[in-house]
Length: 133
Image 1 (cartoon, rainbow, N blue to C red):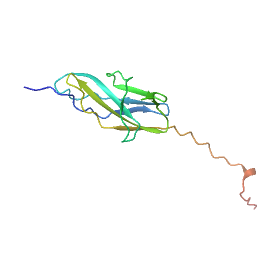
Image 2 (cartoon, rainbow, N blue to C red; image 1 turned 30 degrees about the horizontal axis):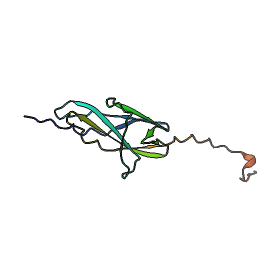
Image 3 (cartoon, one colour; image 1 turned 60 degrees about the vertical axis):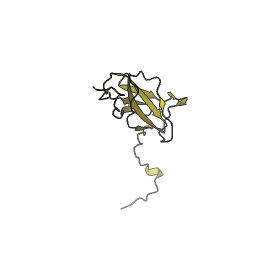
Image 4 (spheres, rainbow, N blue to C red; image 1 turned 180 degrees about the horizontal axis):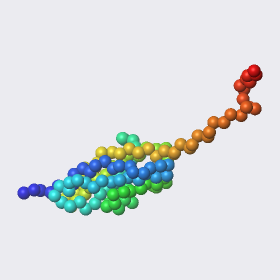
């Protein structure tokens, strides 16, 4: 007789889209419900520091396989901010309970570099010597 237990640890979330305004994650389904159907998933975030606590993302619906974080979204009363690194993990639940979370995914929310201006040469402002032949 098989005894059901909490779902197996899911794969690491994947970042699918990210720029200086948002991070979109792909959340893979757990490969093993361990004998009891999965009823929901849980998404967690922290401030990218191993000593920072993880907080459950309460706005996540528990079923979607993608979730987007936007700059300014509040994470435990702190806004998602450009220039910071965040860590994400993900777990599955069934009627027995919540399984182990995935390994961490770290994502830095950084501004895109602007295109450099083309190099121009202004002979009037140059300190180069003129060669006269």
